Length: 82
Image (cartoon, rainbow, N blue to C red; front, side, top):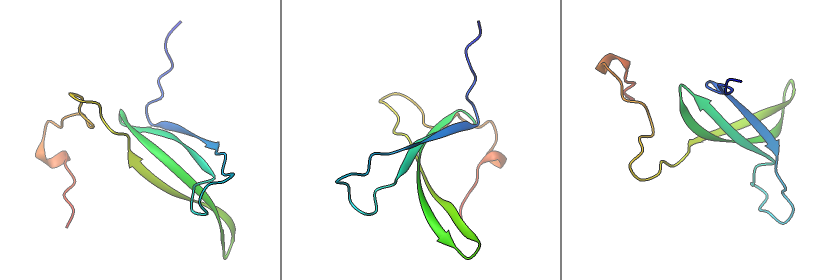
């Protein structure tokens, strides 16, 4: 039996928000993008067209000696903010 490949996928779960600050996310989970792991937080918001999820994503902290991202072979692959 082969191991499940969860690359480029994730999951959200309902958080226990009892006793938590008002801005604590009611949903949380993890996400894998190109082999890099992230934490995902989600809030339900009301918009002009109805309810929607607002998301926040942050990288999971790497343990000592681990790389957070796979190295790139080319400078062209890197995104440089302006």
